[in-house]
Length: 129
Image 1 (cartoon, rainbow, N blue to C red):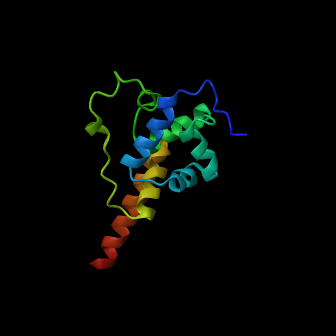
Image 2: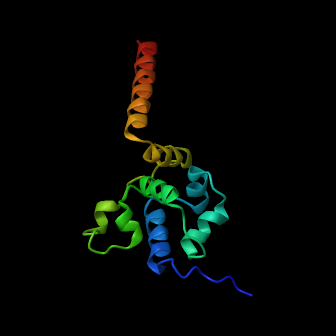
């Protein structure tokens, strides 16, 4: 017997997840890895078999760099799709993973991360002098 889709899941939600994932040039596995989920769990979000918790939804929005309204299919929110195209397609898988993880950080975590990276860069520059 085929699996029944959740009646409360908006069909456009899964399509939006696919759209933004592809715009970011992520695979389902990459997104699942960033979210620390099994790939099949994430696939169920895209196919409408299940829906993520609000916490996971917030993380997904952070990964794709969009507002929750865009993911949920609020057409009035998305004035121009080009605004959401993220030029990370030319990054390696490892670099894409780092970008996805960074987008999930809180502002204070981002500040800490930037400070660490800045310090590492300064150290690297001193080594080249």
